[in-house]
Image 1 (tube, rainbow, N blue to C red):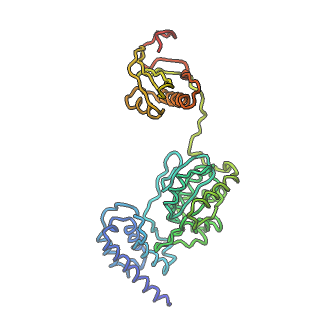
Image 2: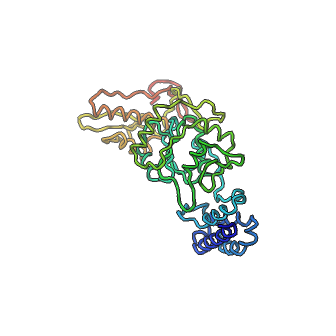
Length: 386
C-alpha cells in the first residue's frame, strides 16, 4: 500500500471516528475528545486537510466534565492512533493523554489509583492489569507479604504512578503482573509495556523500547527515578493468569525470597516511623470513669459508669466487647481517645475471661493521674481523686 493510500485511509478513519464522537453526547465533555482535537490541531495536516473535521468536533464541546470515561471503544483514541500510524514522528510529539499528572499527597501511596492497600511493610505489589474483580478478590484474601494490589490500564500515566508509589515504599521488592492485559481498539498494553521497561529500558525521549502499546512514553518521572525503580523491584510475569491459587502461590514464593528493605533509595520515606513508649501522664476523663467486670453466672459483660465525684450514673451490659463499647460510645460516656483504647483492651480481657473462666482483674490505666486541663486540683492522691 502506497504512502498516499495510507494517508487517505488515515484521513477517513479520523473523520469517521471524530464524527462518531460528535454524535455521542458523552464525548462532548470528555477530555479524550478535547485533548485529541487540540493535539491534531497543532499538526500540519490538522491545519489543512482535517481543519473542517476538527471544527465540527470543537462545535460540540462543552466544559470538560471528566478526564476519561475508560470506554472500551474510544473514538478520539482510534482517530489519534490512525494519525500516529501514518505520521509516527508527529504522533510521538503530540500530547494525547487527557489526564494531567496528579498532585502528590502525604503518606503512602502518594499518588491515587485503582488499588487496595493492605500493609506497608510487605515486599510484594500485585498488578492485575485490566482485571478489577481479580484485584478485589486478592485484597479480600490479603495473603501474607502482599502490600498493595490494583489494576493498570495505561502504559504512560499508569506506569508512572506505579513507579512513584513503589519508590515511596522501600519494602516493596517484587511487582507481580497478572490478569488480562488491555488489548482493545484503543491499543493500551500496560503489562507488555512494563515487561519491556524491565527488559529494554527507555530511549532518550522517555519512550519504552520494545513496547507495543500506543503511548508508552514516560514524561513525569525522571531517568533517575526509573533506574531506581528497576533496581528496587523484581518483575514477575504471570500475565493472563486470573485464578487465585496460582497467583497466591507466586506471592508466597516471592515472600520466601524477600531480600529486605531496599537500601539504595535516596528518597525520604513518605511515612514517618514512630517508636511507641508507655504514656507517663494519665488525664482523667471529664465524662467520668468506668468499672469493667465479667458477670460469669449470667454470661454478660458489665460496665459501670461513674461521674468523677464517684456517683454511679448507669450500667451497660452486653454479650460481646464490641456491643458494650458501641453502647458506651453512643452515649458519650467516654470522650478521650486514650481512655477509649484502654477500655477496648479491658473489654477484650473481660470477654476472654467470660469465655474461658480465666480470672479477670481490671488493670490500672498507665501513667500518673493528672486532672483534665482547666480544672482545679488539690494535688493529693487520696479520696478526692477518682
